[in-house]
Image (cartoon, rainbow over all chains, first blue to last red; front, side, top):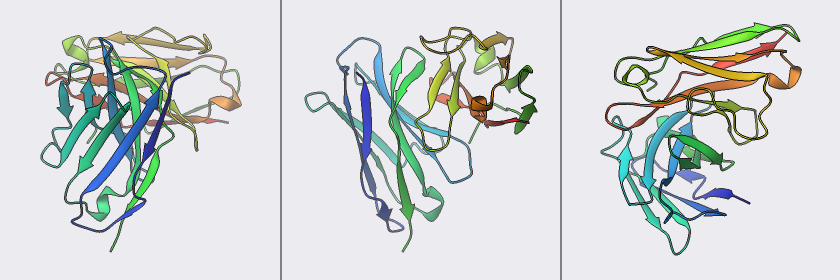
Length: 118
Length: 110
């Protein structure tokens, strides 16, 4: 059974760096063609892709956020970590991770709500 | 920001057919990248409905179908059911190999 679960702070202050962890099971990030991506959805707004890391450590970022994002993986722990620097209230959103298989995200976590407020 | 454009909402009566369009450009859908479709229900994880333009994962009812032509794609739902009331998003890739999502469409069952 494939599962993904996001963890991290529920509240961060403006200018702080957000660190989120996606812990997964049922698949390996060492497998050819597998990746893990991060997304967010602000309340009442559209889903937005943030970043993806592939099995071969290839990393891609949203062009509009690339300067603020870093994605890494720890295959021994089955974890993918996303950091987002210089948080702002407009970054308040539910953040989710998902497994990427070829071009599709076929398994998703439930997401975690992150609020940015002083 | 979304680079794939979807209608904000579509609606239909139970049993009817509705379609959702996803309009991209020559740097994403038109460049030959596949299109995926996802269903988002409140309080639940997103569900992959269609991948590689028109393939349904195991367990997805055949009421859902996808197509792609040129710089656009479409999701059709036939035999609309109350449980289909949800938000739907298309997704593709662009020439920089970044993933891109649509603006989202809310389907209402009248």
